[in-house]
Length: 134
Figure 1 (cartoon, rainbow, N blue to C red):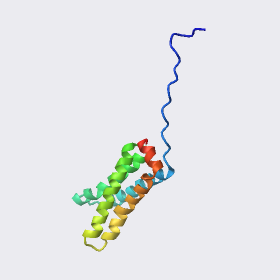
Figure 2: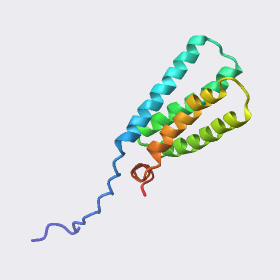
Figure 3: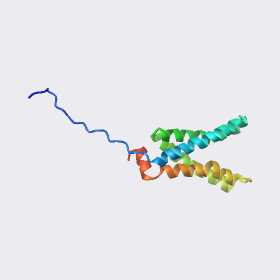
Figure 4: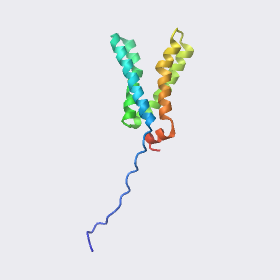
């Protein structure tokens, strides 16, 4: 029985993307929540000077990382790891070299804790493979 001149070819289905672990979504939601709290708190103070812009850079990065992770984007993973490393360097720099009363607490709350949450969520093998397709 001749059906047609074309042969039926089975095309290999695209490899399914690995599932993203639940803790990546939990970290993304925590980052979005923390950045939203900081943003709302800063906006309520109504001081829009260069210091405000400098303080909003990490908040913007945390919002971008959270959105990128929730949307399963590769740039979210890359931005998260790069930002976490920079947060750790900045936090340690503040603790070691900057003098002040609450420098250590500020560095812990605003730099080291978010960086730790990001790295703990993104560096395990399952999370890395889900975003990088390894």
